[in-house]
Length: 234
Image (cartoon, helix red, strand yellow):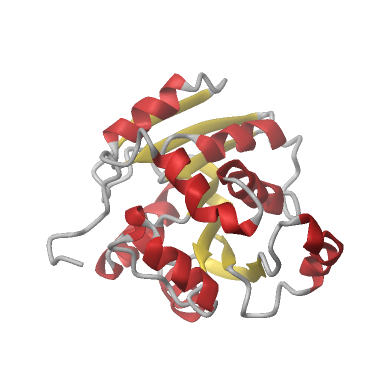
């Protein structure tokens, strides 16, 4: 990690990101699309899929998560932002209806106060220097409506397999994983109030483990899941 790194720019990985990610997660028994969709499905535990909402996909990358936001929340207006111009270009080329993607500087969100009902981010904060987390979260707080929800999905550093995968992934070279306790603390510091910290992905997705997958819904408290997410409210 270099001192000048603030917010990792994925321009050099954008074109081959999905192929690379598929290779990285192959051992799990699922593909890159699966990991994009499962996070959006988690939102259905708390959000009404028929509700009309304005959603910010923060760190949208190539727009893969927004595909599933559109699928499961058809009445949303989606706004995606990322520091990678190349990724944003790919997102716009996907032709997702009622979705706008644009690049930003990684610091100031190009939106007015209280624009969004929901902010979603997936595997982004470990690519942002810790010293910037507070400022980014305050921007998210600013752009959320009163009562708006923030969902932040992250890798779980308590899981040894997760740490191995991150170490071996070329676009995670500079990643610094967030401890769940730190993530909760910095989120609350912004003014957002953490309501849930749920752990996910306890078993591989191979058919052999299919009978165990149903147990994951009762293991969300267990801090060894491969990933976790915070649900916070303004």
